[in-house]
Figure 1 (cartoon, rainbow, N blue to C red):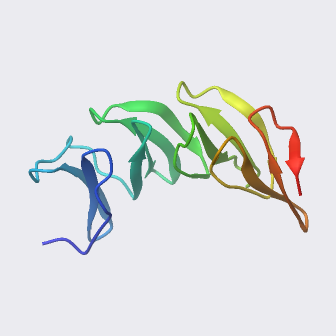
Figure 2 (figure 1 turned 90 degrees about the vertical axis):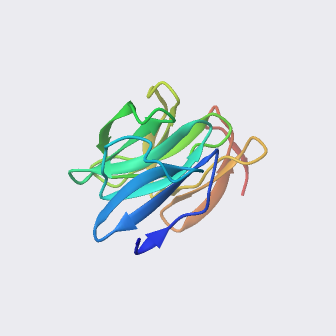
Length: 136
């Protein structure tokens, strides 16, 4: 019935049929009528999804929580999510969509235990939520 599916996370899974992704609850009912070009699992109540070539986030009701404005996006963790702007520079937003760390990195990973791995040029190092380098 579906070409691909993600694991369940926070009670939902994303499944792909052709080039379209939708979210299903544990009973197989669609979360909403919304269809997406790409979808990631729910984390901290939000899921990164792509529409018209841009990423944004939906909540567990299927409503847009953060507008579609990013060239790339990853899962929320510890209240922040890595996002990339149109220049493919990565930074972080909070659950309200406020930019907490301005896009400036070549890559940014999710936060774990208060720190996240980021890359700038050929250097990889770890930052805290205030964008201070904690170690390299």
